[in-house]
Image 1 (cartoon, rainbow, N blue to C red):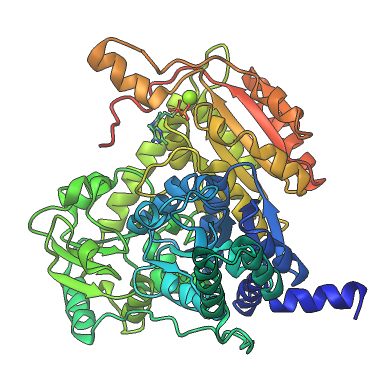
Image 2 (cartoon, rainbow, N blue to C red):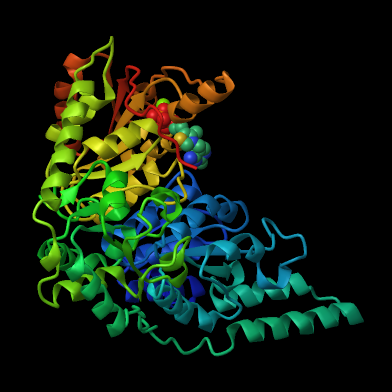
Length: 588
Ligand SMILES: Cc1ncc(C[n+]2csc(CCOP(=O)(O)OP(=O)(O)O)c2C)c(N)n1
Ligand SMILES: [Mg+2]
């Protein structure tokens, strides 16, 4: 055997290929990574098997991308990073995925099994660093376990409350057996002393264990994913509460759309329920751009008025003021895969422990639900929504020397395409966007979630763009937030990924400055420059555009879209005016 055949045979044998084979069996199409010697065989074998290896400039980006991919496709996103610093760099994204309940599979390299704890390159005890942030830390010690571990990780990541799973793959499990045995033989030396012979015996036995049973290559079958279902009693109790209610209200959040393949059915169910609804997190866009049942403003007021509130995949955390937003006397129905989240800070009247999206579908399938709803409840909410829109219009019409962020997003709302996916990464600029932009369709809005992590933008956009090839991917970036991801314009350009970033340049970390200056009369640490971010990305080969005046907004956005359609990555640096719009808002 020679040439490609020999190479193929070699690939077939090594552990890196066992991993790649198992990824392929799961239908993985992209592997996000930043290379390292510990994981080279996985990357190479993945590419040989037709998996697109997408390499980035910071490991955290790889995991953010895997997270976004998971959220948009409903299948786990996968990243592979090298041992030690490669892994420590992912911690923020892992934690973010855990809190967002996003099914990510992270494959991490590790020092050779026989050298762990003996001062090898990048050898640290990875378990205590990673374990608190994942559902399971799978430590590999035998080649034959690699494929089954991947299958297990995929099932675990998606089952119950979804979340990240880590597989630690020591480098000596990933290369072919002959090379590793040779490497161990060289390490053992040829000496004849007792310690030399003892070492040889030990290393030989060690290799024996590592490769035991690895001769049989069994294609790893995907394992069953466990989707929890709420009990029939909870369904009936919820139906009864909703049917009696005069002013029912739903809040649907990210967890209700984790079964991404079912979002169309879910959207139909929500419309059939006929109950006014607020959509948050990944559920934004579920009912399309505008739907008469969907409210966008004054949620707190509505929750105070409602006499029955259904929280679907939404915990009573800071976003609902720890449950205080819902009036005491209201019947509270919590549909959640997590028992803890369903009961967080407030005991619901009905706890439907199971997939929230399926629960809504089951409710809608049980016949008319909004039977007791007051004639004018929907009208009251709609009027309030319209009043708030009118107030925003007034604020959007105030003009300074540069660009009013509200006016900017009004323009982006009408310029962005029907297939647009918006990635939100920043403070005030992004909060403003969340009131003004209307996500077009289910799963077309990505924000970090409960971890409130700045810096998700580039990785999320990468994952989104690959999950939705051909769609417009917009990053809505604060000028502070963009600093984490600017270098990924290099990745976008090299891999031909036409992301459009709009940077709200207010020369500061404004969301923080607003309160800090008011409370402490000190802007320390919150001031940035009006930096030329568009020039930075030009250095990577992307197109940089700048908007300093409002009359250039529409034409520049149109230009950015046209360039993206030609395959170019674009950054639009928008000089913002100060605005009072976010005055008084604070999250803790
Ligand atoms: C990783 C991380 N670091 C710090 C923060 C705290 N933080 C929240 S909002 C914000 C300001 C964001 O500034 P920018 O992106 O420019 O948006 P702006 O508020 O100016 O519109 C900061 C620093 C955070 N949420 N995440
Ligand atoms: Mg800013």
